[in-house]
Amino acid sequence: MDVRLNAWVRGRVQGVGFRWWTRARALELGLVGSASNRPDGRVEVVAEGPREKCEQLLVALRSGDTPGHVESVGEQWSAARGGLTGFAER
Image 1: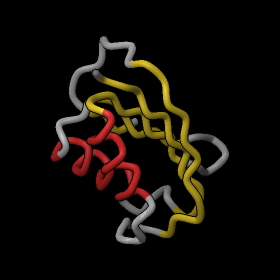
Image 2: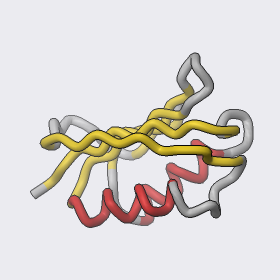
Image 3: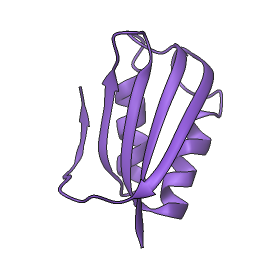
């Protein structure tokens, strides 16, 4: 059963390749969705796929191995909505 993960990443995560890195991890995991810069300096990650794969992406976002510097990651889980293809950087 697929789920949707919404994650909000706070820190120095814009202009450092963070969205590209997130996209690469998500595609490796077979997830669809997007990573988008927000006006307040956060990056919003939307990912859909199997829960265990989304959890792996969340662990990667919190790993300290990302470009830039992650201070915190907020998360929200819901049922997958579908309609997404690929993984976009916005």
